[in-house]
Length: 435
Image 1 (cartoon, one colour):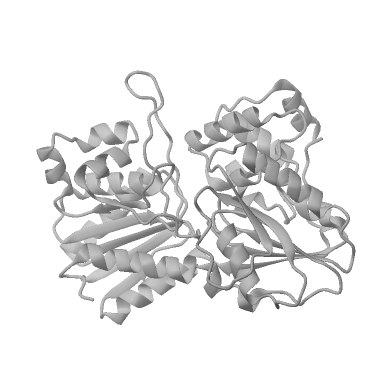
Image 2 (image 1 turned 90 degrees about the vertical axis):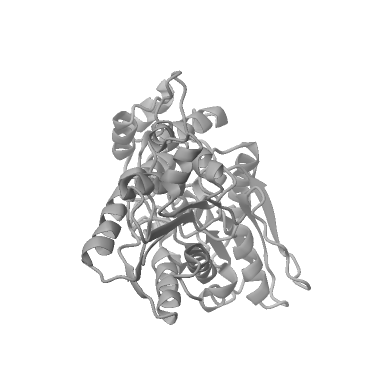
């Protein structure tokens, strides 16, 4: 594949390679634990949970007992391979704002965890998106409260660690509480990381992992982003009554976590694919955070330096990065919140604005789960003619940035990247090609 003849097709190929590296069927077998003397119960949540359950079923001995329940996002159950017997129930719920289906699934999981003995195994399948899908409000909170708080967090600009700190302390199942409920059984968690730094306690708010954050930390975050919570719950946080299990808690002594796919592994796979066709490839980081549009501007400055000055890299090359950026949704001129599109689209808006049509620079940014924010696209595509084509249609990029409308901008140009659900999730994928 020649990147100079069809840059978009080439970058879409790199994205596909990155996603393929993170698919559960390619990564699960080597991490499965030994069969226990007693029962094996599978529980889990996340955008990849359905695919992870199928992978466990494919590799778990057919004559060994296996049962369980996982919850994934609506329309994220992959097609079942011919001949594969379903032993783990897969249900669907809403993401990124939780719904009653997610609440019902979490209640059932906590019930299934009760009564496990020391000879039993709980195999937990966790991936990004699990925080919203596995919702079980703390004492004094309703589902409506959780939905409103979740929406406020998503629009606030808080990073994923901050959001999940709050979520842990407002939940009866996150922050190690699911593992606590399984004691004294052995708990093995297979996780697909979607967070900067691959911290298992942050992935899906760590339902089986001890939590080092505190009620005081959650209170500080709520105050920082002006997020209101009901008075009785505020009192419980202040008193420490909603504290999570901490490192060293004996109830979590028999737990283990394995990361079966990470953002860095996917970026390395994409870099190898680029090098295979003779193109230099550079990975900036798999842990990038910050406002999406600002991260886009930084990538643009780097790409322009390469294109114009040959520094710090010689062109032609592709520059790769990952992580989880944020979008602070601003009010529109009418006073209502804006926001159509997600992190990848907003990155592309900031990138295109800063590139100002720089010759020889092309880019693709997409979420590896195939869904950017709450729309139906994975991300977007930028080329040197992006701004000029938009202006011919009367579309000014500043207006779209002002109202966080990446979806409207790139759909108007026919430059959305649409894949449908990929059944995995290792977060943002960004590739900038400089020819």
